[in-house]
Each structure stands twice: as C-alpha cells, then as structure tokens.
Image (cartoon, rainbow, N blue to C red):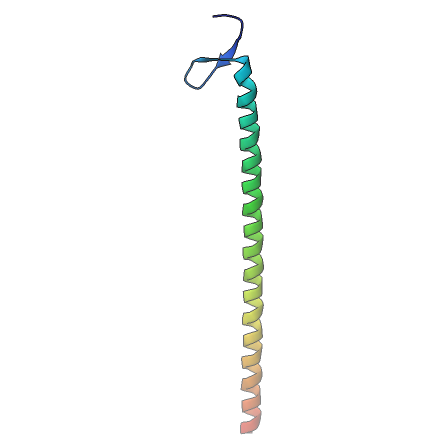
Length: 78
C-alpha cells in the first residue's frame, strides 16, 4: 500500500484521499435530504392537525344549528 490511501470503503477496499471528500459531500447531502424530509413531514402533520381542527369546528357548528332548530320546533309546538 502506498501513502495515498486514507481508509476503506464498505467493501473493505481502500479508497484514495481524493474520494474521501466525495464521500463526505454525499453524507452531508444525505443529511440535508433527511432534514428536508423531516421538515416536510412536520408541515404535513401541521396541515393534518389544522384540517382536524376545522372539521371539529364544523361539527360543533352543525350541532349548535341542530340544537337551535330543535329549540325552535319545541317553541313552535308550545
């Protein structure tokens, strides 16, 4: 082995220093990709929560309307 090798690849074969930078760049790119994915997942979760809240509000409004209608009918019957 000559002095240009700095480690081994996954296959156990040594790689040259010139490739080490490429490997590091790939790893940092992967990290950024994962961070982006996590951010997208968080945004999706927030959107889902907002949709659920809107649905709950709509249900509450419907229930209120139904109660009001029932009260009006009861008053008319009296």
